[in-house]
Amino acid sequence: ADGRVQLLQAVDTEHTVDSVEWCPLPGCRHLLACGTYQLWKPGDRPADRESQDTWTLQPCSRLALEKQCLALSLDWSTGKAGRASDQPLKIISSDSKGQLHLLKISEAGPGLQAVVTWQAHRFEAWVAAFNYWQTEVVYSGGDDGLLKGWDTRTPGTAAFSSRRHSMGVCSIQSSPHRENVLATGSYDEHVLLWDTRSLWRPLADVPMQGGVWRLKWHPFHRDLLLAACMHGGFTIINYQTAAGQAQEAVSLSCPLPNSLVYGIDWSWLYFCRLPQTQPSFPGSDPEARTADQDPALKVADPSPAPSSECLADSDGVGGTTHQDGSKLEAPLQPSAEDKKDVRLPTSGIKICDCDQDLEAADFDISLLATCSFYNHVLHLWKWENI
Picture 1 (cartoon, rainbow, N blue to C red):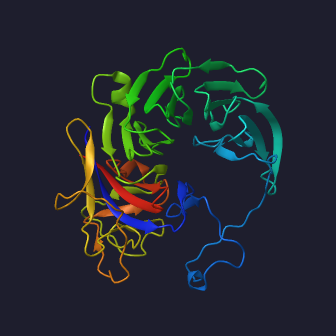
Picture 2: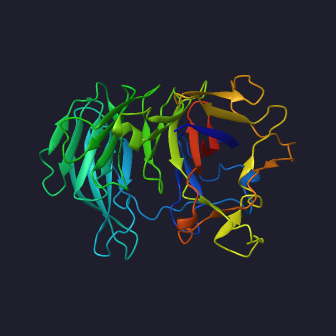
């Protein structure tokens, strides 16, 4: 399948950014968090930043690592919808000394409880992730090039260890849609798809155009996998075609020149087409907004640069170009004088913030966000399957 993305908005984050996450909670899915390498110190935040639109995050619990040790990743045990009420809420984290940390969270009140820590890799443990279908099982990837699996009830010995990646393993995610599917990515510029029942060889090997720092399955579309490919921009992989090995697995590849894409995520907002006989009035549905009225979903048109699109060719590989055909060498920065944003041409479509309209959803249209490290830019994109 071919696809295209349209740049909707670009935001200068001021600091170097390496992670972005959309909120999955109904009613709050219009919110996303973007993580940076720098923090505002108390009292250092510029006065002009204080406004009614400012959000402040308050820490509710902390767990300190040993000195000279960096937390490198974490994953929640709730990656799959439908967590049983008696299933504990857990976090798995990895650090720069090659250790994994299993934590539990008390839902009665804020509080992190350290369950167990163990040595998993000789060098940096870049990533740790749960098997969302069996949360006693976790996976880890390290700078030693190893992908490992662990039973957290007996964490001293790895359940399996694979050297199928030729360089450091830095991204892992269990599929929330298919019980036995796992995706891994590496500095070796390959995404491997695995059947967790048979880990001696991968189901598919999909070459990328850069090191694969982050992988994200689509929250609703069971076949779509998003990859942050560092110097190679970002890529959308179709699991069905990759596993079948009969067609090109890459639905879209979007290089971003002069960028280092670390953070990437699909939005949990989704689009629904309204029946032609059903008008959509602002405020008639508090859980949904029409695309024409949502102020956050506007095509970025900062003067003098036109908006950009990244179109996939027949082989799924595209490039980032202006609409006039010229290459986009720098991120689009909204101008302070630009007050004439062009709205998305999506009449008859509403943007849904809860799950009650999933049966009417059009998953050929999705929103996603990426962030670029060195040029500190957060991008919001609209992806369409064409």
